[in-house]
Image (tube, rainbow, N blue to C red; front, side, top):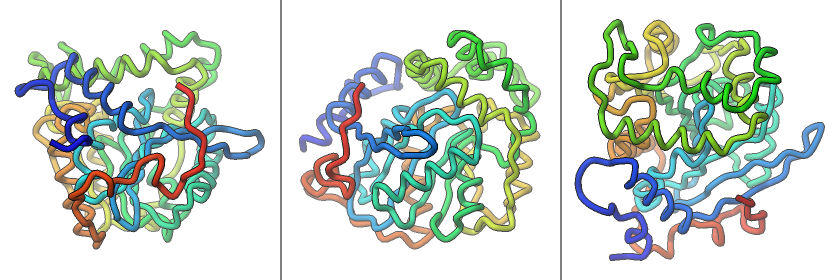
Length: 325
């Protein structure tokens, strides 16, 4: 068994649970080094990211949902790099306005020497991906949206009330929509919780506990402040929309609006997965990603030798600072 595969092996066969997620996450951090680049935008901010993959010319950049971190995509690093996909999971610094985030993200991808990218965005990450693709259609080759939205009207709130709220209060506000017994989805009460979904929610909550009040406030500013997605400037035929059918914190009306905005996009319903399918059913999500990249013409070469995998020592961003935990 290869070194890379051995570190990502499952502890045991069977359903993913909380203990297994923690063990796999620990091994992920042993394999993939977190990096950091500083961007000067009014003041210096630090973007943290994980970068690994094969020979694909155009990497897939992963943008996390509100209240989560780049770590939530750790299971996608299990298979995709071995299939020749270079993936970059990004953790952005705190911004209070969409235009600040968008400009700093543009500078970030330039700083790590990326000309064109594919973007996978989950939740708020998908909304930001659409805003960025609207401004830079030539730079964004395609988009994958997971439990995301094209309008944030249902999330709008006066963000001033969050500015001085303690971190625990902001965590509770963000996580109140997560799957739990008694929650409603599509007019039905959730009475049975999937062990995989429960473990995924628990993992995200654990990661959220490490976020500062400023990070959480930033997420809510971007989530709850209105922004406009111009669908005429975004390629629908190079878009895949993934929506979970068992549960999503995105309400039905907002989900339907996304499909109506982009009727020519490839729509993939997942029967299970909950809010965070890239944690609860990562094999299914990885298969969809591979199909999407092949459909839009990305040439992938499967990795045979672990040494061919791009890691922190080999990637084009070599020389960047390792991030402090």
